[in-house]
Amino acid sequence: MKTSVLLSWEFPDNYNSPTPYKIQYNGLTLDVDGRTTKKLITHLKPHTFYNFVLTNRGSSLGGLQQTVTAWTAFNLLSGKPSVAPKPDADGFIMVYLPDGQSPVPVQYAQPHHPISRLRNDWGSPQDHSMPQSPCPSS
Image (cartoon, rainbow, N blue to C red; front, side):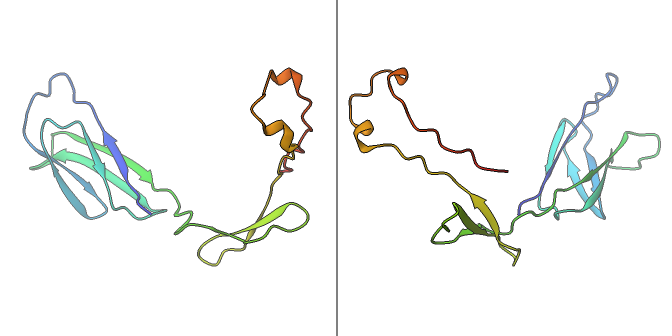
């Protein structure tokens, strides 16, 4: 799963230095152009706490420094789920999730309309008495 964080910021009105600065997080450092006001941080680990610090490239004493923390999302699915080839008689079909998770039953309803209603003469919806399909239970 691709996990990323988009950092964006605004400079104070009196800050007009094009001097580059850096973003530090979890032991890593990224150099950033002095005129940039956002940075996409990619290749992060899922479900991980990150502490991002934006500072001057030189000494951070007395200079620009801003800190923000973020948690990346869980890695919900590592791959595509698969579906059982045949539904059961109760209107359920099994969906198998990756990583050995338990299968999930999903109920479905298939509307039944006589074939004569599927011809070209549609008319107005009020002219048709369509059978109601049961709503899936939650």
